[in-house]
Image (cartoon, rainbow, N blue to C red; front, side, top):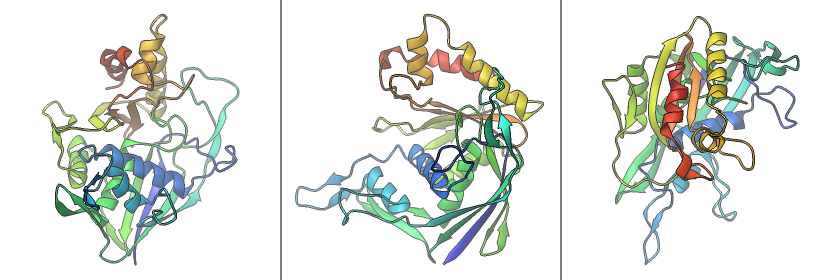
Length: 320
């Protein structure tokens, strides 16, 4: 077995709880779920369902089957159930917990418990020797996952997203401060630039380009299924503090909710009433107080004809 160890630190308040929904707890299953989300979001070039031969067997394995082989899956029966190809353990080291406003632009007296910035935790991932996952794609046996891609995926998960409530509005952001493979240290990105992030993305998939505008953009022109995959990644301007950036993100969300345009806002930016549609604009906070904004494919659960990219662009302009 090989052991990969990451020491991590929170950047913004992390509202994350255990099974009771109240007690602060950083669970390994939550972190693995986040990694699974980002792996799926970067692999839209793979069809969701497998192509099955009329004579039996799979011509091409689909995203769903490959994903279950990497991260585990229940399957339709005990025979189909798969264990995760790696194990993950999270240990809290230095906890700084206190109340914080979930909506910074609208402070209240009833603050929620959160892991505050600079709380530390350790993540230990264990994999077999010569770890690799092979799948049948486009008629060939292809190595779709290995140790390098696992490490890269963990790095991208720490940069692009957060953990807990309001992760798409900057909360729960965290960074890797040190990393080792079997006690051999390897470098981490202290303040990642767009070139650094593009280098990581290219390890996972060839289907993204770095534009002269400073954004990472999907370049795959084939057919893609309808689910939230990564369209674009952008880095915003530096703020004086993470708190000021969180305020701007929260205020920008409020300002886009204009009277009479609620339905267009919901279809463009997400909603939690009468069904749930998670926002396709994913904002996280980098260690040096810059925003990093990932725009996902917009697939609202209703009123898709009202979805408006201009609403998304106006929201992003507040902190890009």
